[in-house]
Length: 495
Image (cartoon, rainbow, N blue to C red):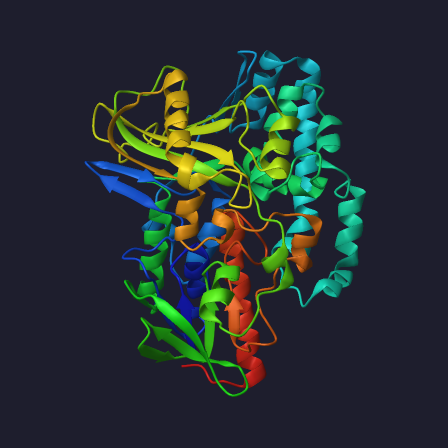
């Protein structure tokens, strides 16, 4: 089967990796000059700075993606554990280091809080393991035919319910930890899923499992090397990748089934199936004229966005800085209300400051460092006028980074706000797509196939299973399954 993949982001590359070794003729078309999509890179003056995700979770899923293409990940990437995984600081001046080893982390919590909280940590981890196992095969690594398809997973629903997965996350985490600071570090992950811990189901703690239990890792040379390595692996396996090739339309025949794509408004490539890694609502609007996106994509609730400042700077990391540093503001519940419900900036913003140069000698020249400062902010549905205030807010983020003691003698820098994310083709100016409310998750999330357009399959964070590098890699795997199903249903012979 001739398959065209639109976009060499991680979802598109994952789909290509899974398809090429199954005998399909795979062509990946990427509008930019490099692979990666939102797993971007700022390379200048000897610096190599990630401009997208900075944290690698579940590296086994990445290894499986390389293996699907018949390749050994170790030949393309060097993956290393990050320890401490995070350094968390709080408004009261306290500091917690989230450590890779469970026993070491137990002792860290004993030092940070008390023996009771340290004992609760092991119980919490065991609960996370049980919850992840219940969710993994039933709701994460699976395709859904539609909302009612969830009934086939009744055994999984019973198992998740047994572990309290349908209660509220904040209450579940509080049942383990009395210390409000620990409640924060084990539930803040909901923010980028568009929810507060108070509103999120406890089953969303699967993301906490991925870092707390699974561990945080980093590829030598930065996250962008995942994209370049995976792109090389798929080409080595027999796929073709064309860069600087913007797809302007998905072509369809009389039965509305896909027949190929149009490039740059003129060139056409014939295909039996198309895998689309563009943001789903944007793809419907710009590539599929006459076919509306699913209701959830058109009228659903989108996750918050982020204000991001990345820089290559002169000077070393401050004493005690880790690779990933979370600085919590004094607000907690109010911070979620500000961004998600009121659409305004946090009054005392919590921010992430990552320093890729801590532990990665390829990130910066000698005597220099990299700074990646990330502040969650409302998306374009919020009340901030980014055209008017974006530069001022970026300056404010730089000042906060300096006040926290990080070097800010800039050699090269770049900032991104919701208008920049929108210009990259991301709906509502957020890199985090639809929020993971109950009605926008699992079988209720926009599906990766559309019966109105046979042969079209979506991949990426805007479809199944959701947001985050591990989920996006799985989305490519699920998309490849859909192509295989379509090939069998239409009896299209493989190339």
